[in-house]
Image 1 (tube, rainbow, N blue to C red):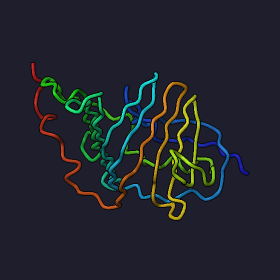
Image 2 (cartoon, helix red, strand yellow):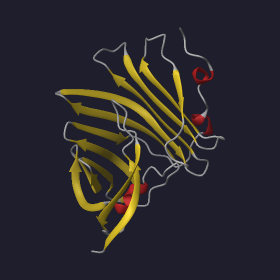
Image 3 (cartoon, one colour):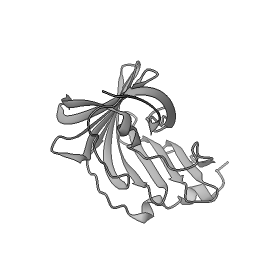
Length: 213
């Protein structure tokens, strides 16, 4: 195996509850075999499962990316122990704007004071969602959450990220695991389409209004 040193920008974008933070890492990795070729423009319906501090939370959401247009979306509804209330985690990346903007909505579904925050993006351009796979280790065929997948993994600073793809089709992601000493989070891809509705990246009306007082 050939040892290479590269700057890796990959999915670790982390909020308090759910992984979603793109962090640039400089590290030495071992090059493995051919990595899967997954479209960086896609729309996916996902299920999420998080284990931390003896608790388990479940949720559903969507991840949409248009790498060419420099737009990205992650939106999740997380259960809070009852059927009538849930946590909303929303992040829209609009690198096509001048200047680029990230829109964040986070709060409880029945909170009338929930509002949108506008932030400067951490990077000059939208980073590929699966770009870190170029530096991942090929784990071969394993089981993740009782699902047989072909897995690829990377570790840095106490965080491990594993992506399992369809063993018969390396272009289809099946399950993503993010693991630290105190947390495990699984993202299961229920659908994965390489065409995206442009309306998915529309700026929410809430983000064009001042927060309620």
